[in-house]
Image 1 (cartoon, one colour):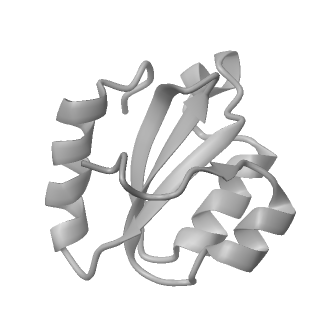
Image 2 (cartoon, rainbow, N blue to C red):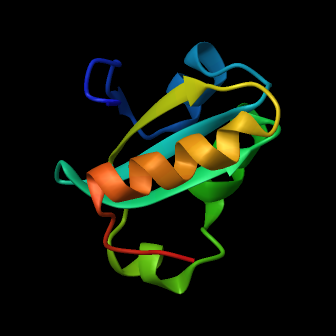
Length: 94
């Protein structure tokens, strides 16, 4: 579960202050509904990129206002992403 982790406002200041530049998974939320679950080798850079506009056009239809992240090392992040997709059932998928 990711629910035990803090929820953050989806803005540049929070991303810069709270998110590490390393491997992990993240979940984007709009009005507390999960919109998207992703993975990256650099969480901070990925979330900043998402803030400017996500590659998935579906995410643009549900602008995120909060996010969560979890540091997950190496290739384990792909399995963790798939697990979270099953748990959170995001509106947008790749």
